[in-house]
Image (cartoon, rainbow, N blue to C red; front, side, top):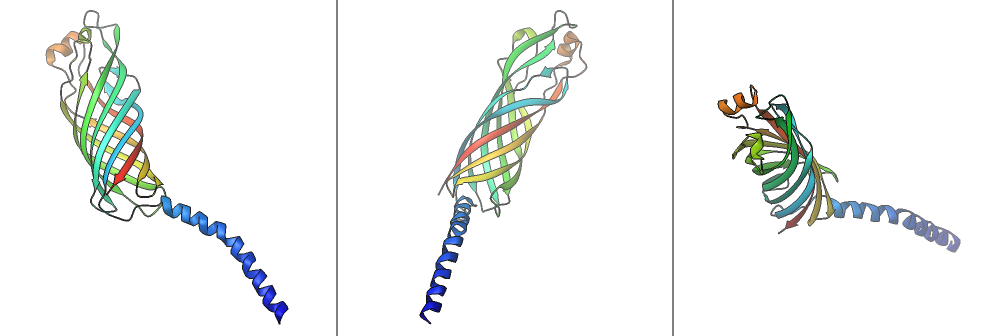
Length: 215
């Protein structure tokens, strides 16, 4: 009988040691999982690169982007954010003096936006999509180009993945952002000077951001 009790005890210790690492592993996953409280203020910053799509009249090169953000979780699924994004790049445009040749100049773009983010928080890598409204403008445009891009509207769209590095406090976001831009066309006189029919483009950005979540 004592041998039987001893055998049961040894067996229990063996299975306890066998499953303890698994329990600890699941605990680690749980610590990185979605937060559970619904009232968080968020502050974030990120880096990435930017580019242009559907270009007519100019040819923009890829560049670098920096972003800061602040937001609020309405619940586990829905969040509102205010973002500012600064990007710098080179672009090529017709020379007003000799339109058959191209000027290569450097410029920068400001993007400000308000967006709503819809997240699926039930998994470790949380997918999300977002949409909003914003404004943009170019700064530092060389006068030699005869181009001007003052403040105008944009529609920011995004999709990405979020993972909590530290539960309820720090997350890392990887996302692709596409900006539908309005008002980028130039005046009739400028188009004639440059020998163009139209100036049109959208922009995009791949970003990596770290976000702090506060009560």
